[in-house]
Image (cartoon, rainbow, N blue to C red; front, side, top):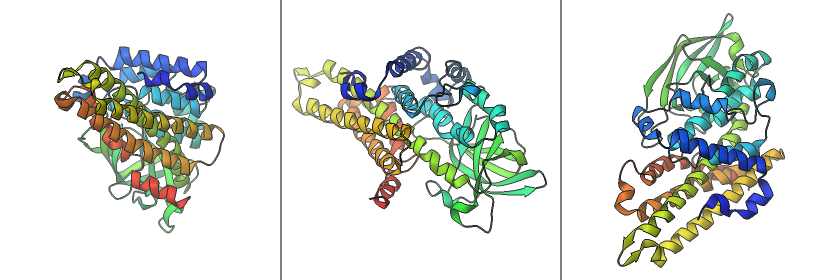
Length: 389
């Protein structure tokens, strides 16, 4: 059963022919340029820049950005269709490499950049010439953005950054970093944080180490260190001391993208597992002949389809410019937990083969684990819901 084609209600309410065309374009690209090659990327720890530039040339990196800079000027629904289609890929590391660039890092530039900054960077971001990363998380500050300790102080016509960032996706090979730092030592919490554009090679910026992870192996993840890192005064992104609000605003985009990733992976895992259990024979029949297996898969399909409907509803709320922090927090918690439930069952039904490296289910199971942690852990998301209930 192909879940992509099964959601008739969703298709008729939210999906246009343009959405279908984008979904098909992404599927063809993944089948041709990613799935046959990405096992080698898992070994090297990052995806080839040439493949990312191909995506840029196809217009996939500027879906929601202004046509004045090479974007398509589309809405959040089109962005969601792209994220979900991309997430049908069985290599989560490649997916997150792209989604960090399109939905988590570069929006800071698109939303907060000055005209000069947009003209200098955004066309190259959209083309894939520049790959971006966002540097907010620290060893003692993740979802609690107010707790960041990295500092930035003025020194003549420059800013000087000091501190470190942890778990930065695209951190090793990015060309452009959007960095959160405290700019007012006397202010508390949200009033003290600003965002900065930091180019690769800036004096005082270095990759402390590349981090070895359980999953997302073809995504480079880094600890970044800023030691008297000097950047021009004009590299302040948005207004001074307004960075906290920029981060909070973009969390909604980020969490919808991660939920799309979770739902896409769950759909792919269910498709793979249905195919497997219909072929795998044991005890005189196929595994699908066993009532417990087919009913369990049917329930997981139902949960995934329900979560997918909620996912599209949240994107619709964004297009309507409605307040939806509560709904998006619910979605992120739900999808992050559900994808792990789905992948655990799918790996189980693959038996020993599900535990063998280089199989799609084994890889997806590892890659799915972080989706209940990254971008807002389930517990943090549920607390956000509780505050608004």
